[in-house]
Structure formats: C-alpha cells, structure tokens
Length: 452
Image (tube, rainbow, N blue to C red; front, side, top):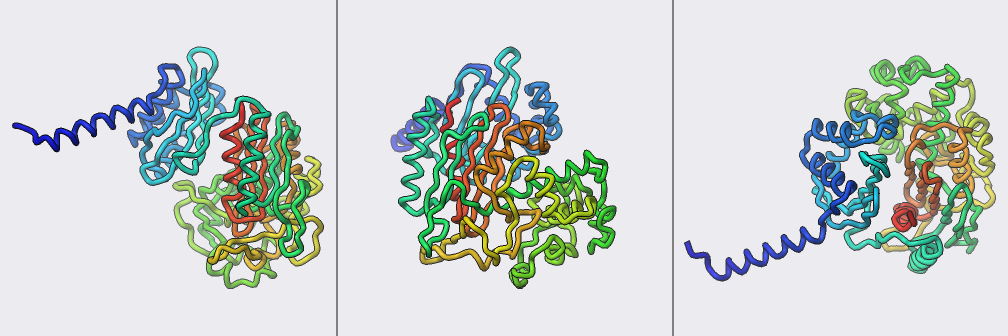
C-alpha cells in the first residue's frame, strides 16, 4: 500500500523527533548510568516486587541498614501514587559515582532524581534523593567552586528581592560554619524595619522535627515505647478507636489515619484561644480515622499534636518547657521558642501573605496565639544551624538525620527550609516571612548549585 506523501513527511518528522529526544536524554554507559536505567525500568513497571528486587540487588549494605528494601519499596509506592510514571527529560550531571536527572511526572510537574553510588565495585546505590524542580528550564548546572556559588546565589537573591518575591535570611554552611549569611527585605513593612541575620522567623512545621527528637529521648529513657497506643498516655482521648489502635510510631510516621486540625473548626475558633497543646485537641481528636492505622500515609498535623500531648503525659511537663530544656538548651538554641503572637517579642519577623490584588498583607489573623508540637515556633537561622551541629555530635537524636534531611514549614505569610546532609556536613537554611514557596524555592536552587 502506498503511503501518501504528507503522511510520509509526518512519519519522518516523528522519527527524527524521537531520535533527537533519545539523544537528548541518553544515559551514560557507566555504573551510575546503568543503575539509573535499572531504577527507572523498575519504577515504571508499577510493580512493587520489581522495585523491591531492584533495591535488594542494587543498594549498599550501609544504605539498607538505614532503610530496608521493604521500607524503600513503601516509599516508592507513595511516590508512584503521587507522580505516576516518569520520563527522563535531561541528564543534569553524570560524574563518577553520581548521576542526577530531570524527570517529568505523568501526573504533572518536574522532579530531580539524584543517585549516589559506592566509589568501588559493585557500585551499589548509597543514596537516592528526589526533589521538585520549578520547570524544565530551571538552572541546574552545579557550580565549580564556592566563589562561583556565592556570585550566583547573590545574583539570584538580589533579583528575587527586587521583584518582592523574597524576604528573609539565607545561611549556607560547611562543617558547621557559615560561609554565606545574608538578610533581605523587611521584618516589619509598616515600620520599615529590615530583616537581620539574627531575626527570628516562624518555622511552621519544622517544629515537628523537635517533637520527634523529644519522643525519641523519652523512648530512650523508657518512658515511652514506639508501640504504645495513644490510650496508654491519654486514657481520655476522645476517639476510642484511635486511642486503641494508633501507636506512637504511627503518629511519628504519619500512618495513623488521624487528620489535620486545620479546617472548619480551626477557622471558626478564635485564634487567641489556642495557647496550649490541649487547646488544639478539640479541633480534630473526636473525628473518625481517615484510614486503618498503618495501611496508608497522609500528612497529619493532628498526629503531631497528639505526640505533644503524649510528651506532656510521659514527662509530666508542659510541652514547651520540655523542648526548651531538653532539645533547645542542650543544642545552645537560645533564640528558639514558641512565642505568643499577642505579646511583645524583640526582633521577630512579621508575616505577610499575598492578597488577590497582588499586595502584601499581614497574616496575623491566620495564626494561632501560640505554636504547637506540630509547628509555629520561632528561631533564627543560626539556631537551626546549631540544631544540625547537635545532631551530628549526638547531643540530640533524630533518625531522619542519618541521611540527607530536608524539612520545611509553610503557611500564609511564612516559609522555612532546612536542608542538611550529615555525610557532607553542609547545610542550607532559608527563612522567609512571605508565602510558600519563598524559602523552599531558594533552598532548592542553592542545593542544585552546590559544588560537589
């Protein structure tokens, strides 16, 4: 059968485009390139058994000690549910035992996958990191040295500040020592008070990391077990099913089925009444579980409120006093605290949220009177660096810190990001008093630029 000339032309164009695309995204013929190809094949199969087998056969013993093949497969399933299949759009960097690629997700968005391998044979996977990218054309070329990095970071931040898209503090450190630290924008726009490098910012959900540290301290002291049900520490918990079935581990891992405290009740509650952990419980604690504990995972502010209440019960101490004495004080974090919003506090950044007309307005009315075990405390960038130093020294323990730790908090008028890698001992800390993703966008870009 003769194919019409127009269709022949279309087919030729399609073949050329396909070849071009293959050339554009071809992986290197190296241990790292072959491992990335094997991972992508297993990932896109949509089969958990294939992924489990990949991790068993291709992951270093050290990495499997941090997270088993089964745990990694569970993470894969959550990631696949969120992203769908993946398509390589660009090899960002491929050097030795490292390969980073830009992926386009079936369900939308672009993501950076970074693979680090053992330096020697059999070149097994040591670390896999996934982070969101802003788009296909984001600047992702790694800088060659620190001087080049600083020039790029300053230009990037200056442009964001000039466009009124960033206000806050940025700190970059190596081996616990800052080599870049700078403040931008205003802590108080009405009074024209500029942010300083020692300004205190609302951390949002970064406080959950401190709550996790506190829980593990009490576990080490024998006052809590990860297998304890809620009812052991809170016998009068309103939801009987949750009290009996949900364990401390479920709460930590956000596999409890307990939902959020944000919602209609939060909106209708005078925020001035939210000043203690127990004040938050009526916002959600009597609601049905969203799923059977341990069978799913969903972000849960409510779960971390319950953890705060468990800390109070097990320690016979107010949550805020407990973390102040047992988390902040040992780490020398003197500028970290959950302050009451309607009481004077020196050198605090006020939050600003973008309105429909594009102007910035105060976020005061959206904030509870006082933060909680789920978030809302304040700290300086230097105090968050002290937190990483305490984790490295073993003064504090958080299992998340065994590998790269990327934690963030965000709500109207506040955004904070802490990106720390124990192995490389490098930290990126960005605090902002503007809407998300003001801080996370900056932290992400800096991490992509960091020299290896």
